[in-house]
Length: 217
Image (cartoon, rainbow, N blue to C red; front, top):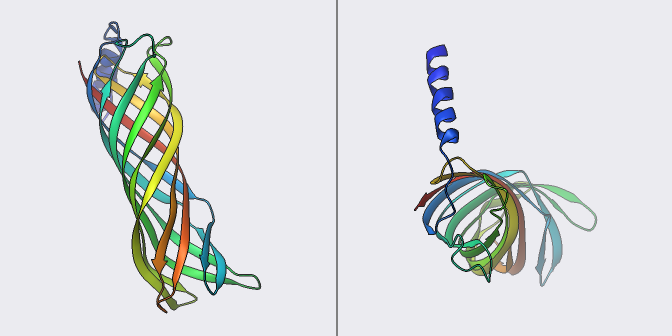
């Protein structure tokens, strides 16, 4: 075990010792994973409304993008990408005007987003960035129950948007470690409950992620 740790440490030292050349443009692939927390959802229907709370969940995603580096200095340094992501949380409880009921089931969202990031290269190897995106999402509520009674199973396709920022660490000219935050939200999804009534369900997520980006320069 000590020998393996020593080899890994030496490998990391070699990677971080690689000199960084001037930023060059190129395509990249990235992957990330992390945790996600949901804001309390307001569920509104013809028979009234209630709020749903959630446990913490998981999220992961991948992207294909292009780093423009210093190609357009009049605009700035940045990247654009096509991102696929998935988020999943469990229902915790539902709050009505005069009561609170235990809730079970899952809410999941997978999305396809076009993102744009402004990135600052003046502090390399540290690369702070901010960005925003928009696209398509499918929101699904699965096996939902309130106090043991079925609530419903349904999904809807909605517009999604996100914004956030983070800090990258450029290990070498190809690999960048990424620690970031995303605020991800959708327009209200229309879902059908077990009693065949429909409700509007909002979705707001806070995601903390750790990822790796491989750039082909």
